[in-house]
Length: 282
Image (cartoon, rainbow, N blue to C red; front, side):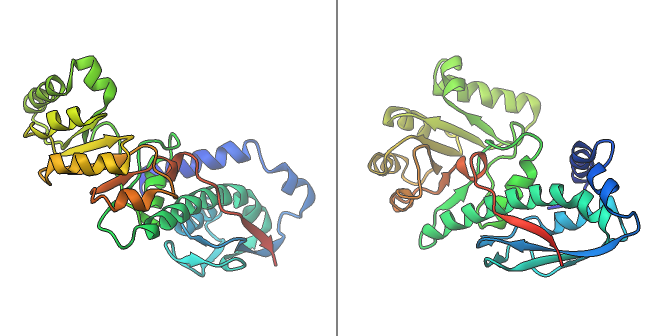
């Protein structure tokens, strides 16, 4: 992840502006301007860390003279009570950055932790866990980075880097074959080289998709593990395969055991629980 990119820098600026507005009047009114102090970031539950490097950038966006020390690295595990960062400098600066820092690292660590938990459930298989586009607007690249930090893999980033013909595309186009043939023509005319994935809802659609040479991956939408085994028998490893929909922590091992290549899980980003983390004076 390029944390020094213009995109990330602008995100940090917007986030701080949203929080600070006309000024941190609580700190300005109660604490002397030249007061210096120390604070440390403490994980209050076990987690996979994601967002420490970003935290340092946020502190330095407020005050380049803040002394920020990272005691762990992104991707490492934190145990409840671990101190992962310390910061020293003007108290006004520390407190102005505090909430924005915590908002990012709590959320991103939540994603990394859940991804790691799910990935470890199927670590003995060749199946890979994928994220989806069910992300927070404006935070997609960070959230997908957190998925990778937790041991998962990224699906397409947006609508532009892969063709995915879902049920609505298929229905509006008049069927899988028509949708794919039209896509082939479009890609040729635009001189684009993009993978094509087709979502299927039943075995008949799987048979139709597998016979289309340009289709790279077939998604099995809301298939049971038993139905996926039937679908894989049809595909015969001629295409990449992906399972999606109705997959939980309780049944994911059953899905991975089918031999499907990928399992995509929207919950990695769209309904994750943030990790409890605090920044305290010491």
